[in-house]
Length: 378
Image 1: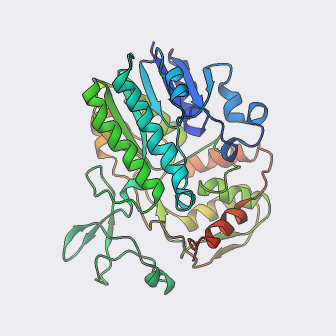
Image 2: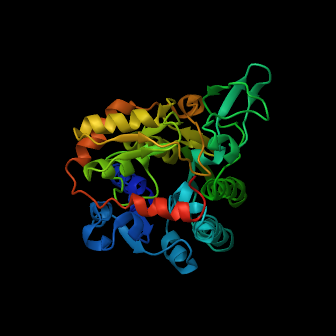
């Protein structure tokens, strides 16, 4: 049995991980500020994520930007799983200080305490993100493996949404992104996740602490927040459909992501916690399969049985990437991990769960207005 601290442990991934670790006999402490954007305005009484763990863990209501809260949380811990973070690509582009304060400075406070005060922490698992890669990995017929720069407004204004390499007009072959791929995030969120990962992987070995980083792809499943209009395309589309509102798809709908089911993410993370082969390593966690946004929207409409219009708008968000999906070779070879859920299986589990929830207010228009007012949505 280990004493394990999960920061952000009342969130979607954190709460599921906490429950799984408790079943394995570990003692869990959770540090979480129960953000209203994720948990609603009255989380102590209404947040299903918090309520699922509150009687099973030691819960500390606090924030990673507080040294005092960190000191209370770290006490007597053997392992830290660091999930607490501000998430959302678009929002990070205009709430820059908030994202840096929580994601970067919050991590710095933890490491500073571990470097300068007595503790018994032996391992830290950091939730990194596929967003640190920016655009994914491609093959050029002429130049071989290439990593395209971020797309320009000039090209996307013309409806040219696919990535190009340099000034070439050559079509590129999309490849799975492996852990050795170029890191060039296209959003403040991605930059902060890169900083978190690098700090953990750099500082921990000097303190005798084993670091493990998981670059999660797009995580989804039963229990994820349906209240947050800023992140989580499956939740956003589901809330729109359940309210009878149409779905507006950005670009041409052919942009792709790697959607990985929550149970697979939890299982991969537990391997990182318990298996010494993970120590000092960085791993992708996904399915290795790209799924385009049109497929996401049509599958959700079909599963819910609610007919709403699906409009491909040609609009685009600055900071969004075109494609990215994970190369899963390393995590399978080192940890023996293979995802158990296909997109079709996972989406069925997700929509079955959503059908049993109260319909949330559709606040997506508010988030769109914020991005438009700041020139981030074209």
